Image (cartoon, rainbow, N blue to C red; front, top):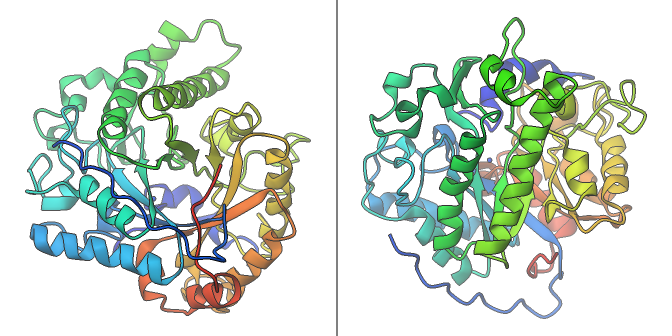
Length: 415
C-alpha cells in the first residue's frame, strides 16, 4: 500500500469525495536571518512535515540519530529552496511524542518501538535548525488519535490510554480518546502544552481529526460519557460539538499563558456545511465537518478563538462535489472582518498522481489555485501537503508554483 497520506486513517470515508466530479531542556532559540529586501511580507508559505506512519520523516523507523537529523535538515533545506517560510512539524501523531515528554511515550515512528528513547531530541533540533534558516516552526499535534489499531495491549505499558482504559473508544480500526470526558480534554491539553512551554515554537497546529471521520455501519460508543455530561444539550451532536469547542477554546487560552507569541492554527476538512443543509454553508455536496466530525470550524473563526485557519481545500478547480473556485470565496467571507488569518491547504500530493482525475495531471493546477486566491485579499497564504512532494516534486507542480508566485523570498508570516 505504500506510505500513507494525511488522510490514510479516514480513507473509507473520504475516497468517494476525493474523486467526485471527475500533517530534555529546550534549546535556546536561534535568531532567524532578516528577510531579504523586497521579500513578500506577511504571506504564509508553508509545508506540512508529516511523521505519522513515517509519511515524510523519518523515511523509516530505526534510522540512527545522525541519519534522522540529516533527513530532517534536508526537508528544512528543501523548504528554503522552494522559498517557503514555515514548516508545520508533526510532533504528536498518535498520542505520543517527538520530544522527551513526561506525559506520553516516545513515538514508535522514530525507533520502531513505542517508548524507546531515540537518543536525540527531534523537536528541539527542528526548532533550532528551522530558525537558523529563517523558517518558522509550528508544532503540529493530533489531539485525540491514540493508535492506528484497536488493541490497547499493543501500546507501551506506561501509555496513558492503558493506564486509563475508560478514556479510549475503538472505532473504525483505530483507538481514539473520548473528547466527551473533561479529564481527557484536560490531559491532552497538558500533554501538548509541555512542548509549547519547553520549546520556542512559533505556532501550535491542530489537524483535521476531532471526532473521527464517519465509517459506514459503525457508531462511536460514548454513551456513558453522554449520560454523565450531556444532559444540558438538545442532542448528542450538540454535546459533541461543545466538547470540541471547549478543547479548542481552552487550548487557545492555555497557549497564550505559556507562550504568548505562538500563534494557534487549525487545518480542518475544507467543508464546514453544505448549503443544502444550512444557508450559511458552501455550494458543495461533501462530507461536513460540523455534522460528521462535530467540529464547528466556522464558529472558531467568527469567535476569534484561533489565530489562523487553514482549511484543506484538496480539490481541483471545477470539482463537482467541492469546487476549489467556490470554496475559496466562501472561506474568504467567513474570515472577513475577523481577527483570524486565512491560509489555504493545497493538495500537492495529488499532482501527477495517476489515481487522481485529469485535472491533477496538469502541473499548472496548483499554480492556478494561487492565482485564483489572489482575487481574495482575505487569503494570506498557502500550505502544501506535504514535505516529501515539496522536496521531490515528481510532477513539477511545486516548481511551477515557485516560478509563477514565489520569485521573491518570503518574509515572516504575520498575524
